[in-house]
Image 1: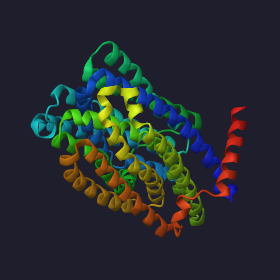
Image 2 (image 1 turned 135 degrees about the vertical axis):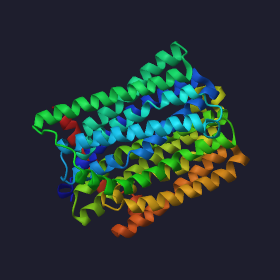
Image 3 (image 1 turned 120 degrees about the vertical axis):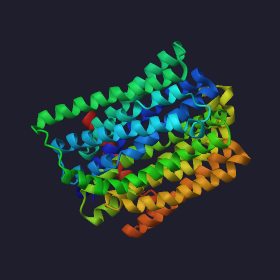
Image 4 (image 1 turned 180 degrees about the horizontal axis):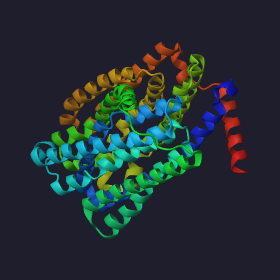
Amino acid sequence: MASPLGLHKLARDSIYNIGRQIWSIGLGLLTSIVLARGLGTDDRGIYAVVLLLPTLLVTFLNGGIGAASVYFIARGERDLGRSIPENLLFSVVSSLIGIGIGAGAVYFAHDTLFPGIPVPHLLLGLLLVPIMLSRDNLQVIFQGLQDFRTYNFIGLIPQLVTLILTLILVWFLHTGVNGAVFALVFGNFASLIMTAVLLRIRSLKIGIGFTQPSWRSIKQLLTYGLLIHLSNIIVFFNYRVDIFLLNILSNKTSVGLYDVAVTLAERLWILSSAISIVIYPRIASLTDETQKRQITPIVARYAFWFIMIAAAVVYGIAEWLIVLLYGSNFRTATWALRMLIPGIVMDGVSKVLANDIAGRGKPEINMLVALTASIINVIANLILVPQLNLVGSAIASSISYSVLALMLIFTFCRLSGTAWWRLFVMTGEDVRLWRGAFAALRQRLSR
């Protein structure tokens, strides 16, 4: 089975991604520590809210172009010559719209949407919109090509540059929130430049020239991409509505504390994200349903057990870890972190299954499932935050993530005819697969 499915290659790609993502965990954690200690609880809360606006705009305006590109490139229906100019054109148009909407929200609805957040900080954060849209829509081309070495290399650049600049601007020069935001802006810009350079080199190497963007081709992307886009918007809302509601129902100090808990908890997702990055183009490229049914349960099992083991460790050392990394001022975030962990574990499986379903060409299912989970999240936050503050927000999010996972498990099993236990129970085949993958990886590294 390993040969026709390419399971050894799948495992090697996953191991490579996980290795890169471990570096990402470290860089992100170091940046988070510098921000927490350099800004303090109040400014850390302001920083978290400032980033909500550009991240929200990027999420709303990307149109699903990146995900659609991965789908069609993996299926061999698009090449670099068409994908690069059309993705760039869409990014430019979306960026202009995003900056306009963002500036309008800041000037006309500042007191309502962003109480207590300085206007200059919000405007500086808008620089992220064109940079992130362009970078993301170009970077996914490498995912569609299943070139995960380049894809992950590009993903580390913004974190490394951001960490260095954050140390200089926030820690040593004490430039506060403005310095922290500028560090993030420049880090993402460096990643955009590197992505463009690597795509140009690859195009020249294989001798592909750019083609004129066509409405028919863009329409094809939008038709598929918008379904994924709506799902991504809802998922993003589900992940970030807790911070938005906490800022309104409580205060910026609570947001700063909660954001530290979220930052640590979401690092556990990086393991499942590293694996699910591989599964989406792989499922899209396959035409045999039997092969799809065999691959995804293997990936889901690894994601679940990786996160489960890591989560158990983090739960046990949560208070010690927070005090060590962020200082005693952030100790109150301990129980928020612990209450997030059950949902984080379940959502790790969700990421794999959602990518399988999207790779099958059924993104509308993900959209409906995510919408249900988001409604539950909002209702739970409104009930629990007034009573339990940031811990209530963490419980609400955990409930929502768990509901999302259960619905996706049920849906995937119905679509594929797979028994639910195959998503969680390890088999002897898994041991043989990873033994072969590690052996092949050692052989490759020794060349």
